[in-house]
Length: 462
Image (cartoon, rainbow, N blue to C red; front, side):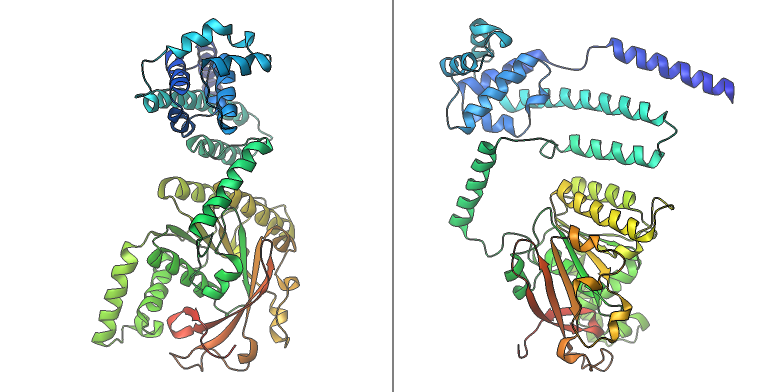
């Protein structure tokens, strides 16, 4: 064993030494061509911005010139040779980039801007290689530190890899002038297009009018007492989003298998009693309804992850992969209380607090809404009053971290059991918007069709 460890140490040291002696991947000609194209054609700037950031340039002088060109572009000023020279001189950077002679040479680095995208991709690929070398080196060094759990090193590495795989999502700071411009552009776009909702509609008009749809980077909590239909409302929303809007979505189920979820989804979409589907006692017409529903579900961009005992690290890793590979626009998690702890020494309320913070961070990182289900206290089930934020189980941090909190209860139909309801009429359920960081609170009435595990808009008296 000792000999093996010694051989490993020697090989690692040799690899580290060989890496240190190498010049990091870069292409000076491609960097010059990119900047040259931006100087002769303003349209090239928009193309380059899709691929490159200042730190993607290996040459410090190219990085500084690129920053000045982008700064002028944001101000609405075209960067020709004279204007760029004046701005670099004004900011005291002219000598740092090689003076007027070097800038003039960039202006003639390419005959035209026709191949701008090609050159930008070369620079980006070199930057990605340098980042991979850096991440591999950092992870290797961290792996030798026995005071750090390997799973945390893995999580850090996965996060870094996700960030470099999507260059638009990076840790950065910005001056308010660029944020102001992008925000005003967004407002102008809303003014001109006047979309009904700015986020992803849930499929329930009354709810969407209050939230304007589920917004990117937001953590949405749906809380309910046991047996109130938490999974059913998540599946109904997921179906509305994927089947009727064709937007990719994912459901992380920690309680049910993928087949159990699919049985519920088929019942919901076909309006065939779930009990009959499970037992096989079906009429031919009902079987046809199931086949028809299955065709629509089959083509929907809905992804199901049903791994039991998922930890927060598992969820983060899977979410990043689904966002990157499948472009999912929203994730549902059923439910918070079943997420397993990565640290057995944490008290339960401390762990749930960590989970809620991590989910909020993940929503911001992926820039998508995350809808997480949560149980309300069983002790509140006998109280003849609507639930409150204080009824959220196990941790008050869920309420603090969430952007939107919705609580489900029966309202005026509390004496009517779900099992006694008429199949087609259902039972009224109130979805109370108890917290809405960026919009109004209030109640949304829904109808729960338990036999079909489905929620529909409420059409009775308000």
